[in-house]
Image (cartoon, rainbow, N blue to C red):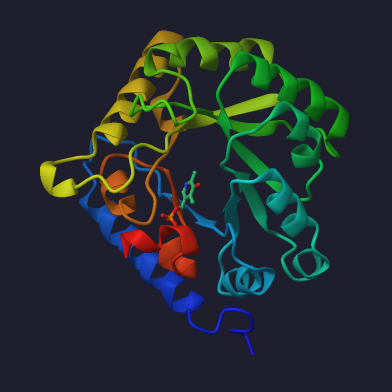
Length: 256
Ligand SMILES: *Cc1c(COP(=O)(O)O)cnc(C)c1O
């Protein structure tokens, strides 16, 4: 019965496979990089509640969604609330101002990975003060558009220090966790390390140098199903993996 709603895909198998691939990639990672063991965010977008419960019961705790309404609905679902008490939601999509309250009101919201302007940081800072249930800061990452594609959100790499400094100095209800990128899809790693991941790691180095931050405490969220192992080798501390765990999504069918 645990496969209810997702008969074709063995979520537990997918999860175990990804976790062992993560472990193997950690072993290949350069010893010069911060030795943080990467966090797996299981990206459950479009996938129904029963498969989230299945992954949770297999031990997974961090889940990611990229639409506010979908995250809010799933986070408040009575089955999720009853069976997944320790679930940790990551918001990984583009955040519009008019959706901030809905997002921040979602139960068990753990982190917003996509802060890409001072205005958004200021709004989150202000609204979190009103909506938070405990004296805890909201964890945020700053999203960087490492591939300079117009369609992608995120600030330019050269703006990273400025935005991180703003979060640290002017947004006292936010906790700066690290940098995030989406990057170009389906980069061919036979051509060498993914330039997006190198760029994000370079941004972290610059931000840490400029703001005197400890590099071991600034995370990198990068890598998805097609490239999370490469991302870990280059220092990812968070990988966001969807289809390798939950099966392909309809609109990505062309990549299969
Ligand atoms: C969908 C999505 C992912 C996961 O993609 P997969 O290729 O299914 O692993 C990761 N990050 C973001 C921001 C996404 O929107």
